[in-house]
Amino acid sequence: MLKRILQALGLSKKEEKGPYDDILQSVRDFQNRPIHKELTAEIIDNAPDDNLLQIVFDNLNAKIPEDYDKHYETVMSWNKSRQAIYFTWCLEGDVVNGGFNQFYFNSNGKFYRFIPDALRLLGFTSFAELVQQANDTYEKDYAKITEDQDGTLEGFAESYEDNPLNVYDKLFYELQEKEDLGKKMVPYIRSHQSDFIDK
Image 1 (cartoon, rainbow, N blue to C red):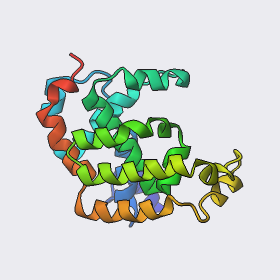
Image 2 (cartoon, helix red, strand yellow):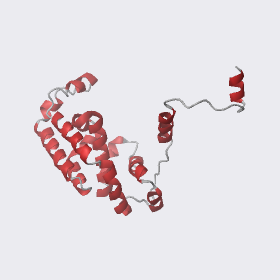
Image 3 (cartoon, one colour):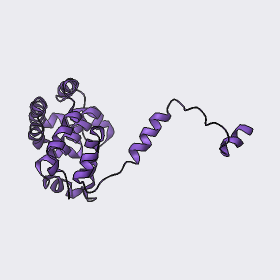
Image 4 (cartoon, rainbow, N blue to C red):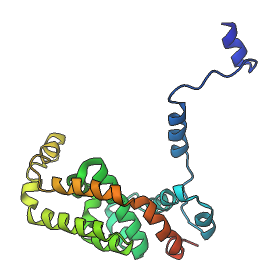
């Protein structure tokens, strides 16, 4: 009891850090990160490489209107550099989380035809070829891939069984071990800074 009173008054040492305190602090830092609705050359110049991609993606994400019906036209109005970063970020997030099946199913899947060119623009030739193969399979086997996707979680889960896209997930992960998409997008952003600044 005395220990608690002393701690409350700030008269005793802080308790030792728990094993998850650093992780919890990282989560808090991420949740409270500044979102720049307008990017300047100064913000980009001062951003550490580890944070730059997140800063640019947050800026792009902030440009998407709340009316999601305008999502497509908004993204398609951006210059090719902004589109390339946005498309690649979304592709990587979906494929890592749930494979190509999830990517095509989710709302960003509507951009699938543009992604090979976006990847080539960023210098990811191997990824571009892989995504083009996945796109071709998706179009060719669309009926089989989507037949169980009836809007339910169960139907979506069932759509993974014998899905012809599954082979591309493994190839994507293998490529990721050789080429870090995130790290390679940072030099592109720095060398094309004017494509990302708002003022």
